[in-house]
Amino acid sequence: MPKFIINVSVMNLYNEPAFRSEVVTQGLLGESNEIIDRSGNWYKVRQWDGYEAWGHGFYGVTHENSYSTSHTFFGHHGQILDQDGHLVRSIHFGSSLNAQGHDDHFHVSLPDGIVGTTHESLSAENLSLSRQSIVEMAKSFSGIPYAWGGKSSMGVDCSGFVQSVFKAHGIELPRDSHEQSDHFKDVIDLEQCQLGDLLFFAEEDKISHVAISLGGKELINARGWVRNESLDGSHEDFSQKLKNLFVKAVSIRSIVGD
Image: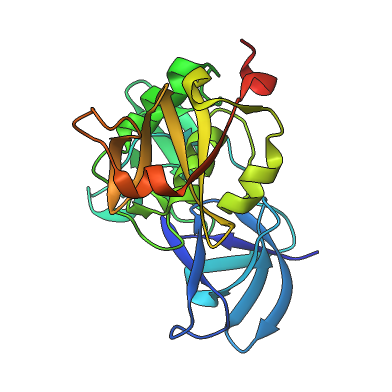
């Protein structure tokens, strides 16, 4: 099946093949997606998490084979430069690249064949999975704005934030908060929450928001921007709205252990 390979740092994906349509999610540089439909210069693609949406052809390249990636960027903003020092591509959290290390830099070959150099730190492996590492990575997003459909360091929605943090650790979660709620079966009391456990919130009996626990009633989430909040009425970061909407907490010990 032919592939649509994302060739920009962050690609918006839409509900319909039109820019006026709703942005439903994003794809990141280096992702190879299955092409399942086409309308003019628009491609309907299926992403690694099963999400299906439309993207314009000028964001990427089509090929029979997937783009061969070797390294991932886990920083938030970086650059790939040509031999004259000019910017050829920006990179953001989650960008996957075909790269070779040379002393203090990497030689990069992009999906369209353009080559360049980056002095950013790239990783050949996922981050080591632990509760502490999940929370440290989540906190590194602090201040990044909320963006509907976002899952990059340019902007995230609540479930895109959670999905991106876990994927950096090699854990692939569904895209949306209600799917993430169904993914974890180990429901726990709020007071039992440890670092990295997930909290879910609902409006009109439908899961609509997710947050990462910082232990007990403290949490970090994408709401306006990525920030710490609390369900403890005596805490300075207390959110009455979140307390009213809270429905359950789930443990992630099935993937990280106790």
